[in-house]
Length: 215
Length: 219
Image (cartoon, rainbow over all chains, first blue to last red; front, side):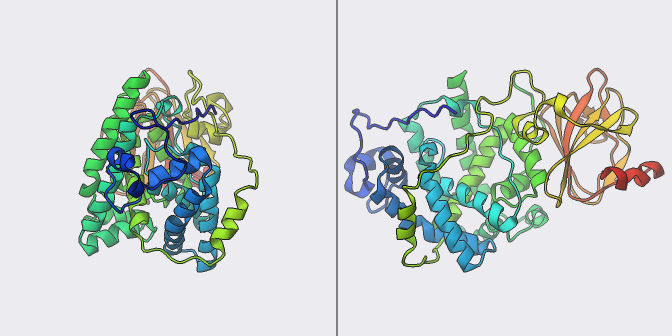
């Protein structure tokens, strides 16, 4: 596969420092809309991807490895297996850093998909067929507005999840931990999927825009 | 050419697929539909983003002291990253979308069909056994034997079209049938119909003979 090196630059053409946190960088706050005190994980991941920045990787590890371990345990792994797989997931993150597409997904979403695939392998002992890559994924150059939109959507979704009543939030979490069967999900009328409908509409608009660009 | 897809994946299937909890055979049907349908691709991405939000919101489980050091030490070990399968996507004239082609090991000419009688043919695809995936070949104008279901059956049209009591299903359309649906899909006149179908329980045929054949063909 021809993976074009991603270029990343601020609006004025400056390249970002190898590792940085939005908190310490006024430009990033302006571009990514990250609030004071929040870490811009996309920027940290881009530092890993484009500069092989180990400090940035360690920062991602401290934040995400415990979350991945917890996800795997809630999906049925014992602590030892979850610990081992969480380390594998983070190693994969480093190895496949070139595939990180900030336009397409936030870091948490990307890590979730890597962890999920590992979970299917190691816990479900099943296989997961992947869709064909979308045609526009192979060609398009990253666009800062899209990177911003993807990060913003992800933040909105995380906030929406946090704002749900406890009972509804638990349902969504259980669905992702494989704690609800397919038929339980089908029967579960209380699943608050309305909260992601706006996210779906946004994603659809972005896909359509990318499609028309690539045609 | 864009397909006019009218019958899509529902939220339950997409969410379960995004969460990684669908049996492989169902996952194959979902992945194939998404390969053909941009709307469902966008919806899948939204569900995956929801998975990301679930991870982000988690309080986490502490790892051992040495975990970070151990992973940092691994970073320099060179790895061979497996090439992405079919980087150029489907060959232009291929009938089978990428995910199906990967199971067949080629396009339509690579399918090892077995006859079910009346020109109807099937090929079971090698998935894990908690559910079964098969390709079905129904000659134009021909009916698939009347059958009901104990579990869920997903049928995705890859070429041609079929009709049953509920509607018409053309290329890219997905029919989601539960155990209440007794149906006799009939391929439309004109083009032979090729479908990808997945079931999580054996089908129940209403005529005696096909029922006897069932164990033979793993229908």
